[in-house]
Amino acid sequence: MKIFKPHIAKNPFLNKCKKITKEEVDNNIIQHIKKHKLTIHGCKAVNKQLPPEYHRPTQDFDVWTNNPRHHMDITEDKLDALAGCDMFHEKIEPFQGQPDKFVYRVIGPRGEVVDYALPPPGAKRTRIDDINYEHIQFAKKIYKRIIADPEVDMQRKQKSARDLRRIEAYERSLKKWEQKEDT
Image 1 (cartoon, rainbow, N blue to C red):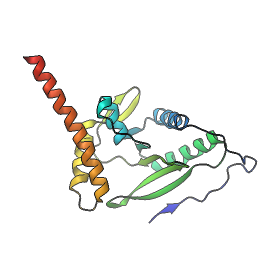
Image 2 (cartoon, rainbow, N blue to C red):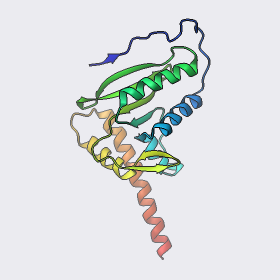
Image 3 (spheres, rainbow, N blue to C red):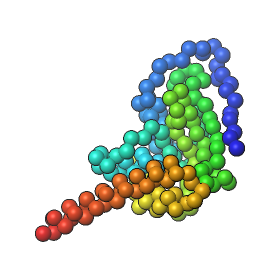
Image 4 (cartoon, rainbow, N blue to C red):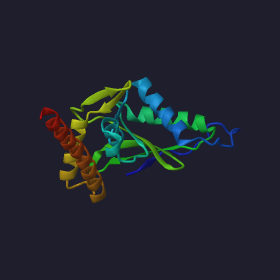
């Protein structure tokens, strides 16, 4: 079941969009996350806690909030205001493998920009540069759960397996480094 919000022009007198960069969009989203003390999870959270050589490229933000619909609406309106026209839209769809839970997406001309969802029970967070991020050990637990879930499609499982291997490779390198220091 997919729910779409109809496109309604915010201001009929604004018929020309400004060119906005990905950095402007990302900065706008980061400011919203900081202001409302939301939590970034997924690949961006893992990348923030790993050295650059272990990073995986990612385009969108995955954010936990207790009110995902509200934040989706606010973000879409702010990004449309930044662009000067109705450039972004919203999409609500069920979580993969969990039809009773939903993900609230803001989508721009180049694809997904930000996904909002409820935090899972027992979610662990860490604070870096005034932003809450999913704790890396909690991310490992989630990745293992996704890999074991028969309802999740193969592409998502492979992505989670790659992310789990990146974390474990970093942890192994730390252990080797600590062993070298001890000798």
